[in-house]
Figure (cartoon, rainbow, N blue to C red):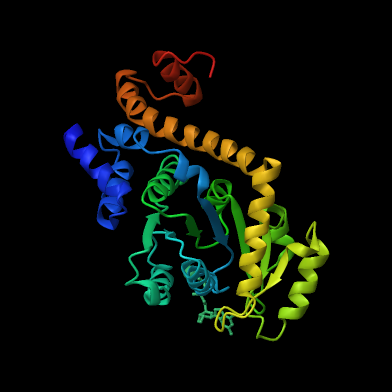
Length: 306
Ligand SMILES: Nc1nc2c(ncn2[C@@H]2O[C@H](COP(=O)(O)OP(=O)(O)O)[C@@H](O)[C@H]2O)c(=O)[nH]1
Ligand SMILES: [Mg+2]
């Protein structure tokens, strides 16, 4: 693609054309030679304004159903949304993703809800780089709220949580969640703990359990994502936390940290092909200590003492 073609693509992104937005995201994801030009041509202002919400929690907790409800709330306020569905690229959870698509069908024809799925598999540097680029392009395409829905509670979830301005951990009764196990990671980093399926038995005691471990009990919300009960309260909590974090600098701190993660991801991605090339030039013999050879490899690329 010529620079002129990229310029016209970006013009269409700024004119909110969903196809152009999707094309720009794909070019950057695929490391197109013009990816740098696309990213450096983006406007800062919409990126500063946007709110990125991460939604995580065990499969079946109701994340997609709740996302659907939040989409309706934000659309009622006239906001344009970007939705990023993290796809584990595994046949086992393929069904879950199909289900998610069905649950978002009510918004499928809405030109102001842009949905993108993103694979976790086959990514060297983690998800931060790809998701970071996607949210920035979506913001330039007029999305003021971006929701990233993850699939479970693994490493890629932590990556996404780092990227989000605000994170919801969605739990539900009857899933056999071991709160103690989750406590180590997600309970601490999530901004709001959502007990979904408030219509189901056990939700009250799950909420009480969470209130006892949460650093601040006002962080616990209850929702019934099927009917939408509790969603208005949840979105107003989100709005007030967002305002708080904008005012006290938390949001800026988080974005700086997220960008550091992204830079490391990108650097690893950039380095990998050069390492692959240089390793064959090493002509290494079978060795008891390949670690030594790894140092040697880095030395050849001008990185001493690694
Ligand atoms: N009773 C009840 N069922 C719900 C609620 N929210 C979601 N579900 C159901 O729980 C199942 C899993 O929901 P889904 O949104 O796919 O969960 P996810 O895997 O976390 O994305 C679906 O059958 C939903 O219809 C709720 O608040 N109450
Ligand atoms: Mg889901």
